[in-house]
View (cartoon, rainbow, N blue to C red):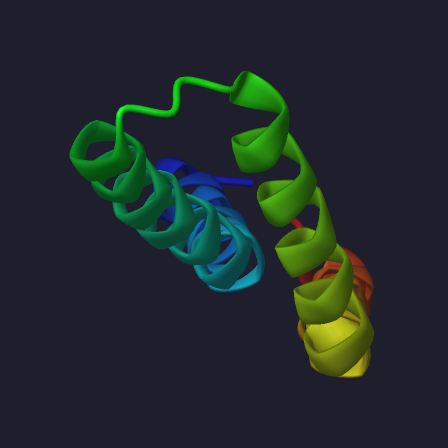
Amino acid sequence: MNDAQIIDVFRRMALAGVKVAGPVLAVILVIGVVVSILQTITQIQEQAIVFVLKFAAVGIILVVMGPWMLQVLSSLVYELWSTIPEIE
């Protein structure tokens, strides 16, 4: 396996990681910012509110986007396993 093949494998793995983790992290970021702004406006500084909202949002995202995330990861694994015979 030469350097170009190794870099290509790492590039595909990083891209799959961003695709899978990106939506979850984006939702957590948006909820955190919105709740922080609302807490600043109302002067309610309860951390449980943020935790419960983020927990619920991640659960919903995983239920809705879970099959797509599994498809992305399984296609990556299939591609990597199919390239094993071509390794020099």
